Image (tube, rainbow, N blue to C red; front, side, top):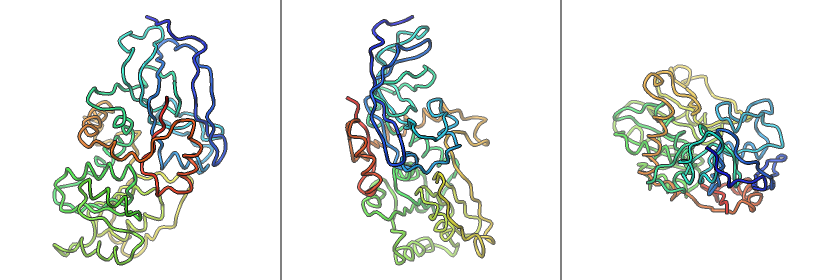
Length: 351
Protein backbone atom coordinates (compact mmCIF):
# COMPACT_ATOMS: atom_id res chain seq x y z
CA UNK A 1 0.00 0.00 0.00
CA UNK A 2 1.46 3.38 -1.00
CA UNK A 3 0.74 6.88 0.23
CA UNK A 4 1.01 9.46 -2.55
CA UNK A 5 1.76 12.58 -0.50
CA UNK A 6 5.53 12.41 -1.10
CA UNK A 7 6.80 14.20 -4.19
CA UNK A 8 10.20 14.31 -5.90
CA UNK A 9 10.46 17.90 -4.64
CA UNK A 10 10.77 16.94 -0.96
CA UNK A 11 14.04 18.33 0.41
CA UNK A 12 16.11 17.44 3.42
CA UNK A 13 18.76 19.39 5.28
CA UNK A 14 21.67 17.00 5.90
CA UNK A 15 24.71 17.47 8.12
CA UNK A 16 27.97 16.49 6.40
CA UNK A 17 31.46 16.19 7.86
CA UNK A 18 33.54 17.52 4.98
CA UNK A 19 37.05 17.64 6.48
CA UNK A 20 38.64 17.63 9.95
CA UNK A 21 36.98 20.37 12.02
CA UNK A 22 34.51 21.21 9.24
CA UNK A 23 30.80 20.46 8.95
CA UNK A 24 28.24 21.77 6.48
CA UNK A 25 24.46 21.66 6.28
CA UNK A 26 23.44 20.77 2.72
CA UNK A 27 20.00 20.78 1.11
CA UNK A 28 19.28 17.65 -0.93
CA UNK A 29 16.23 16.44 -2.84
CA UNK A 30 14.76 13.23 -1.46
CA UNK A 31 12.96 10.76 -3.72
CA UNK A 32 9.66 9.29 -2.55
CA UNK A 33 10.12 6.35 -0.17
CA UNK A 34 10.81 3.14 -2.05
CA UNK A 35 9.41 -0.33 -1.33
CA UNK A 36 9.76 -1.13 2.36
CA UNK A 37 10.84 2.41 3.24
CA UNK A 38 9.46 5.21 5.38
CA UNK A 39 9.95 8.95 5.15
CA UNK A 40 10.67 10.28 8.63
CA UNK A 41 10.60 13.94 9.57
CA UNK A 42 13.18 14.44 12.30
CA UNK A 43 12.27 16.37 15.41
CA UNK A 44 15.53 16.02 17.37
CA UNK A 45 18.90 14.34 16.97
CA UNK A 46 21.49 13.94 19.70
CA UNK A 47 25.12 14.93 19.21
CA UNK A 48 27.62 12.47 20.66
CA UNK A 49 30.45 14.21 22.49
CA UNK A 50 32.47 10.99 22.27
CA UNK A 51 32.53 9.07 18.99
CA UNK A 52 31.04 11.90 16.97
CA UNK A 53 33.77 14.31 18.03
CA UNK A 54 36.36 11.73 16.94
CA UNK A 55 34.74 11.93 13.50
CA UNK A 56 34.73 15.74 13.62
CA UNK A 57 38.43 15.82 14.53
CA UNK A 58 39.38 13.18 11.95
CA UNK A 59 40.56 10.74 14.63
CA UNK A 60 38.88 7.58 13.28
CA UNK A 61 41.02 5.20 11.18
CA UNK A 62 40.10 5.87 7.54
CA UNK A 63 39.86 2.17 6.68
CA UNK A 64 37.40 1.39 9.48
CA UNK A 65 33.63 1.28 8.99
CA UNK A 66 31.82 3.91 11.03
CA UNK A 67 29.65 1.17 12.54
CA UNK A 68 29.58 -2.34 11.12
CA UNK A 69 26.24 -3.08 12.80
CA UNK A 70 24.18 -0.10 11.58
CA UNK A 71 22.88 0.07 8.01
CA UNK A 72 23.18 3.87 7.84
CA UNK A 73 26.85 3.83 8.92
CA UNK A 74 28.38 1.09 6.80
CA UNK A 75 30.81 3.30 4.85
CA UNK A 76 34.44 3.84 5.73
CA UNK A 77 35.38 6.87 7.81
CA UNK A 78 36.62 9.00 4.89
CA UNK A 79 35.56 12.60 4.28
CA UNK A 80 33.05 13.75 3.18
CA UNK A 81 30.66 11.65 5.25
CA UNK A 82 27.45 11.73 7.26
CA UNK A 83 27.39 10.66 10.87
CA UNK A 84 25.09 10.56 13.87
CA UNK A 85 23.10 7.74 15.41
CA UNK A 86 20.24 9.17 17.46
CA UNK A 87 17.33 10.64 15.51
CA UNK A 88 13.72 10.83 16.67
CA UNK A 89 10.81 11.95 14.54
CA UNK A 90 7.48 11.12 12.95
CA UNK A 91 6.66 8.98 9.93
CA UNK A 92 5.30 11.26 7.19
CA UNK A 93 5.03 8.83 4.27
CA UNK A 94 5.38 5.14 3.46
CA UNK A 95 6.59 3.20 0.45
CA UNK A 96 5.09 0.29 -1.37
CA UNK A 97 4.40 -2.74 0.81
CA UNK A 98 4.45 -0.75 4.07
CA UNK A 99 1.36 -0.82 6.25
CA UNK A 100 -0.38 2.55 6.45
CA UNK A 101 -0.52 2.22 10.25
CA UNK A 102 3.06 3.53 10.28
CA UNK A 103 1.86 7.00 9.25
CA UNK A 104 2.19 9.44 12.12
CA UNK A 105 4.07 7.04 14.38
CA UNK A 106 6.89 8.38 16.51
CA UNK A 107 10.12 6.49 15.85
CA UNK A 108 13.79 6.34 16.78
CA UNK A 109 16.48 5.57 14.21
CA UNK A 110 20.25 5.10 14.30
CA UNK A 111 20.51 7.58 11.44
CA UNK A 112 22.84 10.51 10.65
CA UNK A 113 21.68 14.06 11.34
CA UNK A 114 19.11 15.15 8.73
CA UNK A 115 15.76 16.91 8.76
CA UNK A 116 14.20 14.04 6.78
CA UNK A 117 15.48 10.59 5.86
CA UNK A 118 14.33 7.34 4.25
CA UNK A 119 14.94 4.35 6.54
CA UNK A 120 13.75 0.82 6.01
CA UNK A 121 10.94 -0.29 8.32
CA UNK A 122 13.32 -2.66 10.10
CA UNK A 123 15.71 0.22 10.82
CA UNK A 124 13.34 2.22 13.03
CA UNK A 125 12.12 1.54 16.55
CA UNK A 126 8.66 2.77 17.63
CA UNK A 127 8.78 5.11 20.62
CA UNK A 128 6.41 4.17 23.48
CA UNK A 129 3.68 6.73 24.18
CA UNK A 130 5.00 7.36 27.70
CA UNK A 131 8.46 8.44 26.47
CA UNK A 132 8.76 12.04 25.21
CA UNK A 133 11.02 12.88 22.24
CA UNK A 134 13.63 14.51 24.49
CA UNK A 135 14.00 11.27 26.47
CA UNK A 136 13.75 9.02 23.42
CA UNK A 137 16.74 10.71 21.80
CA UNK A 138 18.88 9.10 24.55
CA UNK A 139 18.00 5.55 23.45
CA UNK A 140 21.40 4.81 21.87
CA UNK A 141 23.33 5.97 24.93
CA UNK A 142 20.95 4.21 27.30
CA UNK A 143 21.48 0.97 25.37
CA UNK A 144 25.22 1.48 25.83
CA UNK A 145 24.74 2.03 29.58
CA UNK A 146 22.55 -1.08 29.88
CA UNK A 147 25.14 -3.10 27.97
CA UNK A 148 27.89 -1.84 30.27
CA UNK A 149 25.94 -2.82 33.36
CA UNK A 150 25.25 -6.29 31.97
CA UNK A 151 28.88 -6.80 30.92
CA UNK A 152 30.19 -5.67 34.32
CA UNK A 153 27.59 -7.71 36.20
CA UNK A 154 27.87 -5.83 39.52
CA UNK A 155 27.18 -8.02 42.52
CA UNK A 156 25.52 -7.40 45.87
CA UNK A 157 27.75 -5.33 48.16
CA UNK A 158 30.46 -4.51 45.62
CA UNK A 159 32.48 -1.31 45.41
CA UNK A 160 32.01 0.18 41.95
CA UNK A 161 33.86 3.12 40.37
CA UNK A 162 32.81 4.95 37.20
CA UNK A 163 35.59 6.96 35.52
CA UNK A 164 34.11 9.65 33.27
CA UNK A 165 30.85 11.48 33.83
CA UNK A 166 29.77 12.33 30.34
CA UNK A 167 26.35 11.20 29.17
CA UNK A 168 27.17 7.49 29.11
CA UNK A 169 28.81 7.70 32.52
CA UNK A 170 25.84 9.53 34.01
CA UNK A 171 23.30 7.14 32.50
CA UNK A 172 25.37 4.26 33.84
CA UNK A 173 25.32 5.95 37.27
CA UNK A 174 21.53 6.12 37.14
CA UNK A 175 21.35 2.37 36.53
CA UNK A 176 24.01 1.37 39.06
CA UNK A 177 22.30 3.50 41.71
CA UNK A 178 19.43 1.01 41.51
CA UNK A 179 21.74 -1.89 42.45
CA UNK A 180 22.40 -2.95 46.08
CA UNK A 181 26.05 -1.91 46.06
CA UNK A 182 28.29 -1.18 49.02
CA UNK A 183 29.45 2.02 47.32
CA UNK A 184 29.14 3.76 43.97
CA UNK A 185 31.90 6.28 43.30
CA UNK A 186 32.38 8.63 40.35
CA UNK A 187 35.39 10.44 38.90
CA UNK A 188 35.44 13.44 36.61
CA UNK A 189 37.55 16.57 36.36
CA UNK A 190 34.52 18.83 35.93
CA UNK A 191 32.70 19.95 39.11
CA UNK A 192 29.35 20.30 37.32
CA UNK A 193 29.48 16.69 36.15
CA UNK A 194 30.44 15.45 39.60
CA UNK A 195 27.43 17.34 40.97
CA UNK A 196 25.17 15.67 38.37
CA UNK A 197 26.51 12.27 39.38
CA UNK A 198 25.62 12.93 43.01
CA UNK A 199 22.10 13.94 41.97
CA UNK A 200 21.73 10.59 40.20
CA UNK A 201 22.58 8.56 43.29
CA UNK A 202 26.38 8.28 43.31
CA UNK A 203 27.63 8.11 46.90
CA UNK A 204 30.71 10.28 46.38
CA UNK A 205 32.41 11.99 43.43
CA UNK A 206 36.09 12.86 43.06
CA UNK A 207 38.37 14.94 40.85
CA UNK A 208 40.93 12.59 39.22
CA UNK A 209 43.30 15.53 38.66
CA UNK A 210 43.52 16.25 42.40
CA UNK A 211 45.89 13.90 44.25
CA UNK A 212 44.28 14.69 47.61
CA UNK A 213 40.91 13.73 46.14
CA UNK A 214 42.35 10.43 44.91
CA UNK A 215 43.74 9.77 48.37
CA UNK A 216 40.28 10.39 49.79
CA UNK A 217 38.86 7.99 47.20
CA UNK A 218 41.31 5.25 48.19
CA UNK A 219 40.46 5.82 51.85
CA UNK A 220 36.76 5.60 51.01
CA UNK A 221 37.31 2.19 49.43
CA UNK A 222 39.17 0.91 52.52
CA UNK A 223 36.87 2.30 55.20
CA UNK A 224 35.08 -0.99 55.98
CA UNK A 225 37.64 -3.77 55.42
CA UNK A 226 41.20 -4.54 54.40
CA UNK A 227 40.46 -5.69 50.84
CA UNK A 228 42.27 -3.33 48.50
CA UNK A 229 40.80 -1.58 45.50
CA UNK A 230 37.46 -1.47 43.77
CA UNK A 231 35.65 -4.64 42.80
CA UNK A 232 34.45 -3.22 39.49
CA UNK A 233 35.72 -0.21 37.54
CA UNK A 234 34.13 1.25 34.43
CA UNK A 235 36.25 3.42 32.14
CA UNK A 236 33.93 5.64 30.08
CA UNK A 237 35.91 8.87 29.95
CA UNK A 238 36.98 8.58 26.30
CA UNK A 239 40.61 9.10 27.36
CA UNK A 240 42.99 6.12 27.04
CA UNK A 241 45.19 7.64 29.76
CA UNK A 242 42.34 6.98 32.21
CA UNK A 243 43.08 3.26 31.97
CA UNK A 244 46.14 3.82 34.16
CA UNK A 245 43.88 5.38 36.78
CA UNK A 246 41.65 2.31 36.57
CA UNK A 247 44.69 0.10 37.11
CA UNK A 248 45.71 2.23 40.10
CA UNK A 249 42.27 1.87 41.71
CA UNK A 250 42.09 -1.88 41.19
CA UNK A 251 43.06 -4.71 43.55
CA UNK A 252 43.32 -8.47 43.41
CA UNK A 253 40.93 -9.90 40.80
CA UNK A 254 39.29 -6.51 40.18
CA UNK A 255 37.26 -6.21 37.00
CA UNK A 256 37.87 -3.31 34.59
CA UNK A 257 35.27 -2.77 31.88
CA UNK A 258 36.32 -0.43 29.07
CA UNK A 259 33.32 1.32 27.55
CA UNK A 260 35.23 4.10 25.77
CA UNK A 261 36.15 3.91 22.12
CA UNK A 262 39.41 5.77 21.57
CA UNK A 263 39.47 5.83 17.77
CA UNK A 264 43.11 6.25 16.72
CA UNK A 265 44.21 7.50 20.17
CA UNK A 266 46.34 5.33 22.47
CA UNK A 267 48.39 5.59 25.65
CA UNK A 268 51.07 3.48 27.38
CA UNK A 269 49.74 1.34 30.22
CA UNK A 270 51.45 0.45 33.50
CA UNK A 271 50.75 -3.29 33.39
CA UNK A 272 53.80 -4.31 35.41
CA UNK A 273 54.13 -4.66 39.17
CA UNK A 274 50.92 -5.02 41.14
CA UNK A 275 48.73 -4.78 38.04
CA UNK A 276 50.33 -7.94 36.63
CA UNK A 277 50.19 -9.86 39.89
CA UNK A 278 46.62 -8.90 40.64
CA UNK A 279 45.08 -11.20 38.02
CA UNK A 280 42.98 -8.33 36.74
CA UNK A 281 40.10 -9.04 34.39
CA UNK A 282 40.07 -6.33 31.73
CA UNK A 283 37.32 -6.46 29.12
CA UNK A 284 35.85 -4.22 26.46
CA UNK A 285 32.12 -3.57 26.25
CA UNK A 286 30.63 -2.77 22.84
CA UNK A 287 26.92 -2.27 22.38
CA UNK A 288 26.60 -3.58 18.81
CA UNK A 289 26.59 -7.18 20.07
CA UNK A 290 25.25 -9.10 23.05
CA UNK A 291 27.67 -10.86 25.38
CA UNK A 292 27.78 -14.56 24.46
CA UNK A 293 26.74 -15.58 27.97
CA UNK A 294 23.54 -13.52 27.60
CA UNK A 295 22.70 -14.34 24.00
CA UNK A 296 20.79 -17.48 24.94
CA UNK A 297 18.04 -15.45 26.62
CA UNK A 298 18.57 -11.85 25.53
CA UNK A 299 17.91 -10.26 22.15
CA UNK A 300 18.33 -6.69 20.94
CA UNK A 301 14.54 -6.33 21.11
CA UNK A 302 14.48 -7.40 24.77
CA UNK A 303 17.32 -5.01 25.54
CA UNK A 304 15.52 -2.13 23.80
CA UNK A 305 12.37 -2.85 25.83
CA UNK A 306 14.47 -2.56 28.98
CA UNK A 307 16.03 0.68 27.71
CA UNK A 308 12.63 2.28 27.12
CA UNK A 309 11.65 1.36 30.67
CA UNK A 310 14.85 2.88 32.04
CA UNK A 311 14.38 6.06 29.99
CA UNK A 312 10.90 6.48 31.41
CA UNK A 313 12.18 5.93 34.95
CA UNK A 314 15.36 8.04 34.84
CA UNK A 315 14.08 11.00 32.74
CA UNK A 316 17.43 11.81 31.09
CA UNK A 317 16.07 14.87 29.30
CA UNK A 318 17.22 16.79 32.39
CA UNK A 319 20.77 16.23 31.10
CA UNK A 320 20.20 18.29 27.92
CA UNK A 321 22.17 21.52 28.21
CA UNK A 322 22.06 22.82 24.61
CA UNK A 323 19.23 22.85 22.06
CA UNK A 324 20.55 24.14 18.74
CA UNK A 325 18.82 24.58 15.36
CA UNK A 326 20.32 22.34 12.68
CA UNK A 327 21.55 25.30 10.61
CA UNK A 328 23.71 26.41 13.58
CA UNK A 329 25.43 23.00 13.81
CA UNK A 330 28.86 24.23 12.57
CA UNK A 331 29.11 26.63 15.51
CA UNK A 332 27.98 23.92 17.93
CA UNK A 333 30.65 21.45 16.80
CA UNK A 334 33.34 24.09 17.06
CA UNK A 335 32.11 24.92 20.56
CA UNK A 336 32.25 21.23 21.51
CA UNK A 337 35.77 21.05 20.14
CA UNK A 338 37.07 24.15 21.90
CA UNK A 339 35.03 24.15 25.13
CA UNK A 340 33.68 20.63 25.76
CA UNK A 341 33.34 21.29 29.47
CA UNK A 342 30.48 23.70 28.80
CA UNK A 343 28.30 21.12 27.05
CA UNK A 344 26.83 18.00 28.62
CA UNK A 345 24.24 16.90 26.05
CA UNK A 346 23.50 18.88 22.92
CA UNK A 347 20.58 18.14 20.62
CA UNK A 348 19.97 19.48 17.13
CA UNK A 349 16.44 20.78 16.65
CA UNK A 350 14.97 20.15 13.20
CA UNK A 351 12.22 22.64 12.36
